[in-house]
Length: 619
Image (cartoon, rainbow, N blue to C red; front, side, top):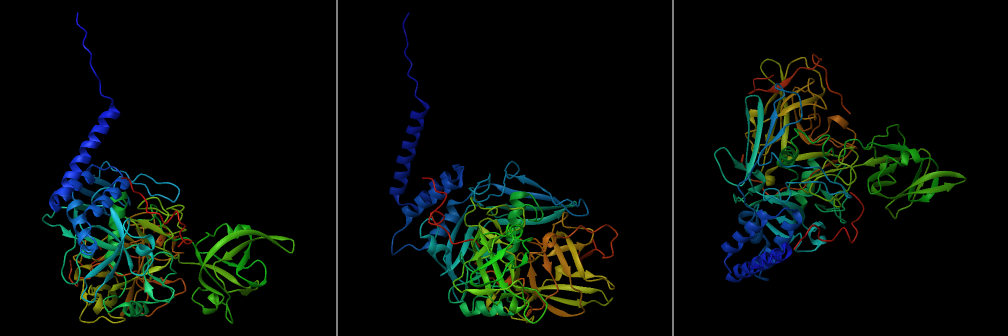
């Protein structure tokens, strides 16, 4: 009998051989110089990747292989990467019951998203995000600037250029993502939303993917941070900046115009996109309870002891445990009056928008305190009538989060800003939408009407009045019956707006509440006439009323409050075309309000060297 010897190849040897073959093929394709072949190969590699780190590494490899110093531009490479490399045939979808079908805020992921899982991360834990590495969700930060004609130039790219060049605020920090095709519609008592790479009947690209020149880009650009002020007091977008608060729609527009006539501030399409990402990744109608944002960080304490020439405030241990190191505060007193409102000038006369540097144990005259040490070089005198008050966060609080979504410590407590697809939101201040103005009125029957007007060409945005450059959104009028009362109601569903850049309530009522429908409030400030600034999301003590869909209809374009307001930075495109509250009981005093065309009437400390490293790269 003959003996046959069989040599078995080890798995590790086979993997090594396969890797060598891939390397040889890759070298051959790169040597060909064919952009089509190179992009096709990297498209296959990206679609075979299973982590964000892998895709980041492939991006860097691809970039280095295609970059020619002095010839190639960042704009052109990013158009190629997002246009041809990041491409797949997946359909990402979500389905929700409309409020009359079910009051739940929970939907279900559909199509290619049905088996995917996503959990918000923190700075200590990278939770599961099955979406982030996929072509339609992968994101990169850049530093960019818009030109007067609406076009833009990208000056720095994450993983390629330095941390400070990308996030420092010299130019505006955007989070880029593929410009996909989306469709939203109602059918048989349900809301559907789907996203895909390929065009199809009824599908449109994102409004922020088309600039004012009419160019449709392969990517969309959304602000990574809320607007902030640089060392010279100029408005910009970057990490580690104090918020642009104590402001109004009018002053925000003026601030942005000082940067350039092409700027005016935030667009409603930013919030609409952020909410769409919440829905597509978490199957929730609203962000509240999933990634809450800063909705419950309202603390004001009188100093526990008087001191002179200090940069700290002494509190009790019970008080101090509610404060986060790195969060922002003001220090002052009520002055000659009695109001402790944050808008009272004397309430911030000692320190304004200053971050907490540390909280330490101290003993003064035999009594133990917690010293809240502030990041300021200007000493002040403290009395027992001096207040320390929490304020909206500086930008970059979530830079250390180990993922695309979440919050630094906890995404659900309501004490800190949220992060969705690498963009911070709900920092504790209202967001003023610059390209919308709202208007109260009455109809022929004496009912109150509330309308939305848009001007997506930011160079034509007006400070306080609705001009001929604005378009009335005829499909979005809300009607409140004569005899109604002002007050908080809740959003049952958001509208499927003809203007794809507008996030607007479809129906508001006291039937909905903070735990049902969109889990966000709408403040009804009834009036027979008057233009209103577009205040969105709410602030650090709105609790259950707050959320990305939340709106407040009560404030004029010149209104300033002490809780702080900010104008988010401008988005990539301004096309000028349509491209703790309790749930109300059924039968409450306030009626259900709907649109006329419908049948049914929420920064941290400066980043360390470790935090500045280029993250998430596998080669």
